[in-house]
Image (cartoon, helix red, strand yellow):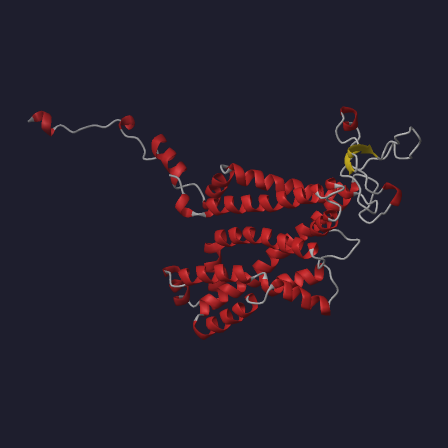
Length: 352
């Protein structure tokens, strides 16, 4: 009994604080990780998306700096240097990119090198190098390819701005107010979407001259329809949530609720849809340029380069290869990037 009545004495080291190593480690891995950090880790684990992003950065750098790497300009014509095969200084010694090409004749395939005369006479081209070759007018295909890539990148930037400024705002406002406002706005969008892009561009060419301005106006008329639908669908899903009701109860204005409360919650879907719209815009510009409705000569775009090289495809196939490869890599890279962003922003893919 005496032992039971004795007071129990505790030492200072008998207890440990709640912030132990195991608890802190669990908190750091699970609750302390921010949403954007989680998105970043998910994105860099997607090898295809990272490769696509690096390819886009590389193409942007080449489009900016590559046209200044030689003495040729995109519109300089040297008739004596027409139809020259690719020739790269240093690699010619190894028998690759030495300026030789196979020509089809009545007697069979003949190996021809226009940089070097077959009879040993001086041609004046011994010290001339065209890394991608020259076209039928003696223009450098390397410079024209990267100038054309600038046009495609401009179209990509225009598609992003149009999606964000027109499509996003239009869809959010339409979905938020609903009712008659939503009905009128969506019927108007459906009417515009029903007009083929080729018809719109053709009508704009009657009013404006062919060029980037015409293509930009064409994108402004119909290029934002897809973003409008995505933004409207997300708005219809979120506008009845509790945080929106709380904002209304506190007296927040409608446009503050739309762009400050709801927009940040759909930012992931917006970025993903924008990335998917870029390849479509680039392909539209290339198609219009291919059929002669793109930028006027001598300005080059990837579509116009492919169209010009297609006429000489049977005799000089090297002309069409560079713009096709750049266009294909650019579109594929944006698709890979968009796919990676979609997986990164999808909360259902979260790993514990």
